[in-house]
Image (tube, helix red, strand yellow):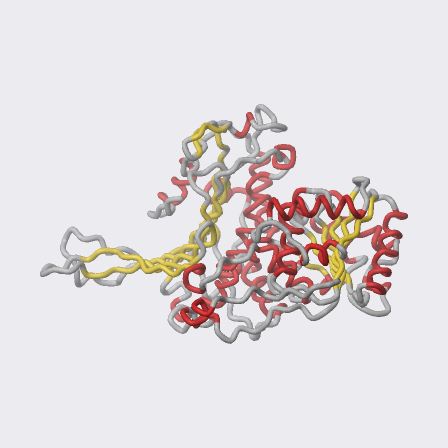
Length: 523
């Protein structure tokens, strides 16, 4: 028997002490729907996607009528799949182990199709299962396809969906949408080729290119911070902003994905998508409405205004690195070239940084410094807006440093906003010191932010494309990084590895900012 489980209620004391959450509307998804996970035996489905689906159900977010279908090459029964997914939820769900009666209801909606992505009969079996779910679960012909597969299989799956009559154009009723994981192509040419394949089956309005960074609460709050506060937007321009730093630093190495990373590197893996998306949110103009396409229009305009690199510019405006052996949290770790499936003389960068400019009225001459790297000192992602210095010094003793004000949007591991400003030190002298005012999402709102995949899967089921990347922005981002890729591929690396695991990164990255009279914020 199905049992409806809603959002866990707050305790009486919690509702009394946290008025910030009063009056919030229900997050319930209204459209019935089937969700199909291609690559259902993979790590992404087990670690992220299925726990996200279970927690959406636990929180009362999923629609009343829904079904979940796994599709992969592994040969297993519906029962085997359910057991495997329960183990995954027990191991990786933020809510702990799956328990009855909720698990029993959830499991009864899980089914499995075994087959390769070249097997048209398997896709016909998928169609039959979808139609059966429409009849038995009331899913009304609505379908969300999620490509949690290796990128090489994206076009293949889309072709077979079309051949099996499972595309949007084949439906008399209901809707079909497709969620595509990154990377969307490995360069501009391959991205355009993939887009051609996608367009043959799905219109752009049906395509949801996922970037899990955009599902993080602090990233979503960039627009609220800018456009819901009169104190920030008037100074969000070249008259007041000195520079912007965007950092995505990791302590992990390639985590057994050396074969993939050898063909990617930090520039493709992080800068072209995650970090460039953050830049677009910081730099965009106010949208005319909260409509998804109005927001994405402004993101595209910001990216299209970025000053193009010439190949000759690359050595002056970029730096790259590769980690060698070192210490992470006091424990020794291998260098990149010693990682499994990595070439012993690899020239793949594990650190990339670049200085960009946006040639428009708002941002002319303001440098945007972007960096991302593996095996750095701390896991640390943030956006730091550094404001210009005061025009004339009046206060402060001779030895006091008057710092530039800084606004920091903290993305991970901490989630929040901090403002650095100058204040007088108590006492008879006019000493000035920099101080920090912090806001933390968890303590401020009394909740722990849900993982990004929960938000993004829910949005795709709702048909809200706000936090997904549109093709024109993907194409523009590839155009921006292509000259860097080309110059790096043409220029032999002689100093790799050039930073220790557990350090701040390569000295060449520091030199990039020192040449401008600035320095990176410490990781």
